[in-house]
Length: 115
Image (cartoon, rainbow, N blue to C red):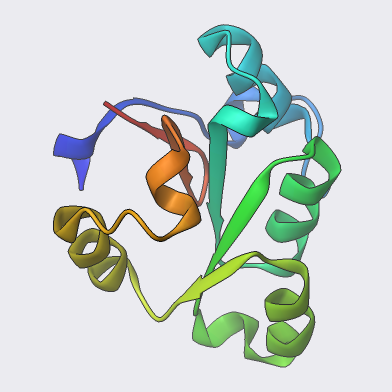
């Protein structure tokens, strides 16, 4: 997936941890992007909550370690995928009917941005 991303943000780029939205706010500031131009990919409830707290649409990725929070994750996220391979297939298909097609900055888990 590295070929799709120009910058990766991790917990080391923020003082506060999720669900605090600091990592996403930092990313948007550095990229000069608004929440409407971004889409967050998350696999945990606190990550989904952080995206919601930043006012950014969020895609949930199924993670077996978050199964106990699956119902809340799905209800708090805008779109769900089973895994990143499904996401890549979707992106490569260039499906214009999804919220993904309107996003210039897409974040994957600990915040990576599409080139």
